[in-house]
Length: 485
Image (cartoon, rainbow, N blue to C red; front, side, top):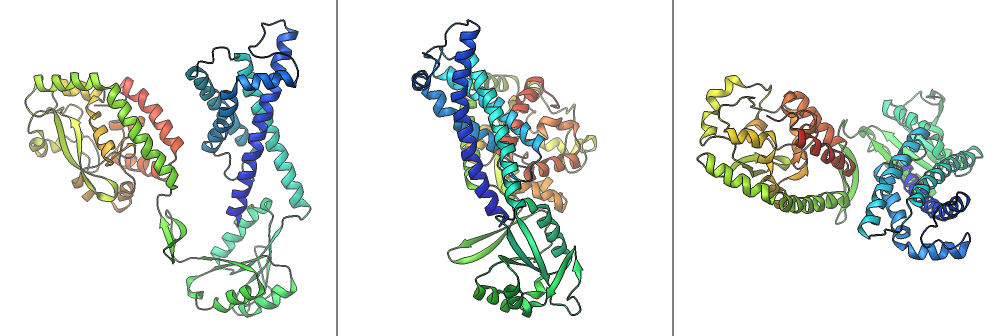
């Protein structure tokens, strides 16, 4: 119900934003030409005159800017969350989103200008275009708020809700509905099947009757939807009530406390005609996962080409300075505990794994992880490779194979997983990666419990934008070797 309204409003807002950006292009042309005439600045390329004929010629010659601006703006606004919780978002937060999106869109537009060698494009025009877009989008936001507030204040687009249930979850649900009052939701009353509840007030709302009274209530007051917020013990009691609503042509929804979930999100789906209720601890849309995998493949191939000289030099150096294989192979635990072989440049002496037991008393990390700052098994070359994170480069093979992602929790050893606490195992619910929040926050300076919490935070808050930010920070960490040992 609210979700459908939000989806419609989000799409409508995108259309309005597209129009604002298009209008900003038109205004920017006239403003830039006017400023150049007033201040006697050099004429702008393809800008013939201060009229619509000049605008038409200018637009034709700058077709790349016209074609790319709107998609760029809408993409960055979407990534920043501009189309989520539109009616409940703070105005200053929305303004911040518009500013950030504007900065990113301007940078991306500058890249288009560079790629397509648009050397005659006016920097004054681009600056004016960006500022004008920010201004019009902000004005559009204010106008939409006033418009929808006015509609709901006059009683238009109201959805009258009858809620069945008065328990704690029903009361929490009522509070949420009241918080979304600006969506036009209005609770007209409550229904409860317990004796003695009739006429009582719950959260400022009156109990209008019992389950068998629903048809009478529907005839007496205007109800658009009946929402059942009831315990699962009521499953066999609400059947007739739902059928009664069906006969009356009233839409119904059911929110049942089947399980007291704290992390997983509930999603209804269908499998070849079988309705399924899914509980997902990691929720992402298929297009997001597809794009993440596409970025993994493209970025891995690009990095493999860029690092080719380093890979060759490292291969020769590792082979020449110590006995043993060039690559170190180790079984790790991946997505949901899948085993795979992880590849790294060898940084330790041959047979280093056999000496781990005698060094365990020197472990400097809490929990099942084994780390020593001055590990005697590390070769002089290996210490440099670790410091510069060069030893991790072969894991691009794991990314290309699909065992790992560029960004994701680091893959643990199976023996470490066996020692995990129950809550820590959830970090295996996402494909492991080369870098994550832990890597860009200090790595070996962070203790095990905090490390696990960081990985779970990444899973809970995952987005393509978060991956981008972690990648950006990783460049800094690798260059300066922060936290590496």
